[in-house]
Amino acid sequence: MKAPPRAVDLGIMACHVCRLVTAYTDDHRARCPRCGAALHARKTGSIARAWALLLAAAMFYIPANVFPIMRTQSLSSKDDNTILSGIVELWRAGSPGLAAIVFTASIIVPMLKFIILGYLLVSVQRSSGYVARQRTKLYRFVELVGYWSMLDVFVVAILSALVHFKILSRVEPLPGVVYFGIVVVLTMLSAMSFDPRLIWDNRKKSQ
Amino acid sequence: MHTAQDLIVCEHCDSVYRRRTLARGEVADCVVCGAVLDRHQWVSVDGQFALIVTAFIVFVIANVSPIVTLGLSGMSAATTLWGAVIAMWNDGAQIVAFLSAMTLFFFPLSQILIFGWVLWFARSGRRAPWFAQAMTALVSVKPWSMIEVFMLGTLVAVVKAHTYFDVVPGAGIWAFGVLTLLITVFSSLDPRELWTLTREDKA
Image 1 (cartoon, chains in turn blue, green):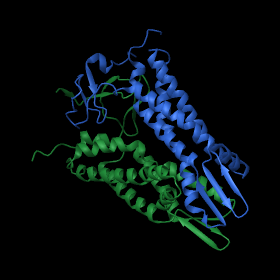
Image 2 (cartoon, chains in turn blue, green):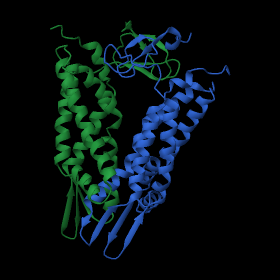
Image 3 (cartoon, rainbow over the protein chains, first blue to last red):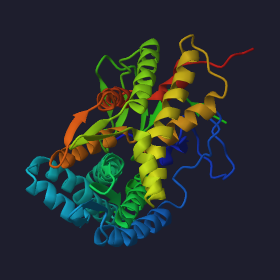
Image 4 (tube, rainbow over the protein chains, first blue to last red):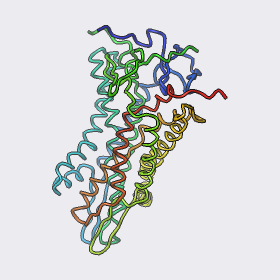
């Protein structure tokens, strides 16, 4: 089957908000005639924005993992947990299935986001034509799973609200959880800034 | 400016297709990159409106009833979603409190209200006042609503607390479960279809 034409080649483009197809324009003030959103063929400053947000996220990722996210206090003990030690505890407490889910959401997903977005950005900057379809799929994967990393943040929020038995037992949030929340938001913004169409633009003929 | 309502452009690779009517259950995928171009809208506008009203009622229940109740030697403590937000705020995690309030309350609520608003008018084929603004808001708010994640987070918290406390699930957790199901239904519908289903009032 013959590949369909691309909008750039036909001199048309679609509104990023309502998808209405219009004639191509590079006028920055152009507005979608239907929904009024700013018209642009590609997301503006896509690569620079995605890099900036990704690097910022990577910096916050260090304190997010090093600092404890939650303190469990009882009469006899005080126990600070980081993301990783919380997972180990959950595993030992007899819920290996749930521990695996939290491990996936809090450790694997953020790691994959850094690796995949970094790879996509580098490959686009080198105008690579290699496995474009697979790279677009990787982008969709990042978009799909991105926000599940908020899982641990919500767990800490619920436990802090619930476990409030004065001196007997208390759970408190610690700074790590704030950093982790910031990491999730920054990586989501980074993924949204990246324009997957760039993967298909000006590819070197490598096929 | 020239526009072409019968064309559809893949959002991930810029390939151009001619729009065609899909049969029940059909999904149009981009042959180049595999992205979903268009889905058959299997729920009518009336049906979508009914679902939104349901979602609103369940959302109210989810927010006023306790999610879980903990018991420890005669004492008990319950929390709602807002209880969790306030606890984070008071314990020095204001950023997390803000994020939770936005992603679990304000964004989902505005999604429900705005979608309900445009659907109410779309039932008679009309465009609501501020239709364009409402549709833009729906698109930009969508990725920031995290009810499903909160649902799973509650389950993890329950299992963690279960080791030390008696845990009694409240009505809130069921309401969040139902909301999660409704969100799954809505994720297969594209509100942008309303642009083609409604026409401007020539009043």
